[in-house]
Length: 373
Ligand code: 1HN
Image (tube, rainbow, N blue to C red; front, side, top):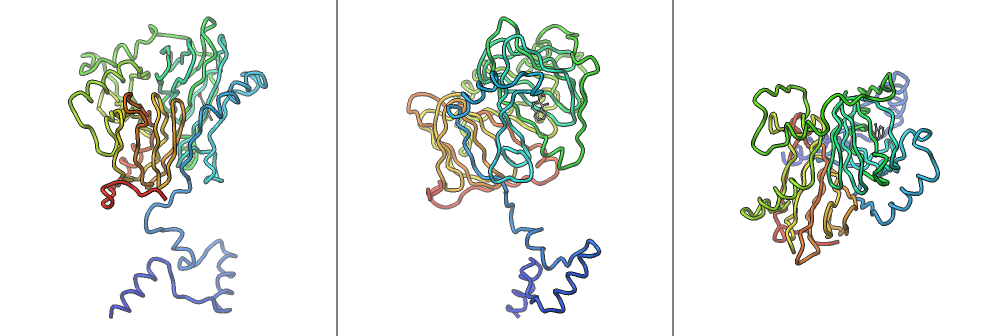
């Protein structure tokens, strides 16, 4: 009986016991002619036992990429290139340009005085400032000024225009978009603004001033779009919040002092498809390992350390970007015994949660830490 049960289990999982007889091979060929196939020949691939990410863990080091990013200023004009971006290409992915999972990321550079053509698309984006002064983005007529470690949302369907003030400096930022996901859903539209530029229609930074006050929302502020009205999230109040939280809590064993950027109207993620967080690893902190569904793209905003991902060590320092693919074991270590380290994270957890696909697991053995292989 046990043998029968075992056979059944194996067969259901597609590890079929069917042998390739000449008759069966001819049958498969016949099916192919009608754009069809026998499920028992492929079920194993269609339905793995657990998530199998095509993406692999990667660290994109800023010291390697920065010079190349700056070089593009000499090689191409913003007008000709459309946008000067060096994108992150996960070597595990051959189907689409993605940094991890269904998330695209790139490093974009702009000279002072440059303005990109206003446009909108179904994909949602964030722009996280890495260096330079004078960067700003106009989102649906709201001009949001941006400094280092600030980020701006350009949610799906919003007109947006990126620029750097003439009296600013060369600016480099990280773009993060859900383009691979929206393309996989075959739902992406792109449109250039009819005037190529977008007039500023509101007081500068109004959305952060209106919606970015901790514990307070405007009494008369109606907002029911599916994304945060705050548009810009600043570094100084973020770091202050992490510091305050760290003064009275141990945070999470897996993530240290971690806080989510939220849509202030519902405490949900900043956009429907992508969430963002900032986490502080206290001096000397070494977190426990866990894994979950969803793809994570980290950006070291402060300090240095390493992460152990699926048993392998990946070192990172300020401005490095690295990824943790879905269902990969990961834990983080702050290299400093005196300073904190902060990791910004862009992820697709809102999609996982909305679709009922979120699952999380802690490492039970080895005191909760992975052996390094
Ligand atoms: C895009 O629209 C932006 O708006 C950045 O800044 C990067 C990469 C691919 C496709 C569209 C932006 C992009 C992008």
